[in-house]
Image (cartoon, rainbow, N blue to C red):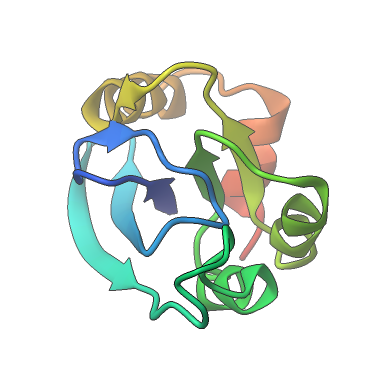
Length: 123
């Protein structure tokens, strides 16, 4: 399963979805996880808050089951959900590895319903 993280430093979930110019993509299962790639998004207008079209960005992340963000607006969240990605907002900046460690553990036990749905989305 692929998990996406909006980040400014590749270590912390600390970026607004609409402002993110890079997203870290990890592969994860109950045995472990690894950084798969970093997807970069070219700004369409650097003077605007949403530097990249959120609909296009969501489409380009549609192979990911879950998206972790610091912030996400309603229309952007709708684009994410339309692409069968489960958005998760963290209230404070959080280390990516902390989330991955917790997810790996949950995948090996009895995952919550939302996580089961994310795991089975492409099945």
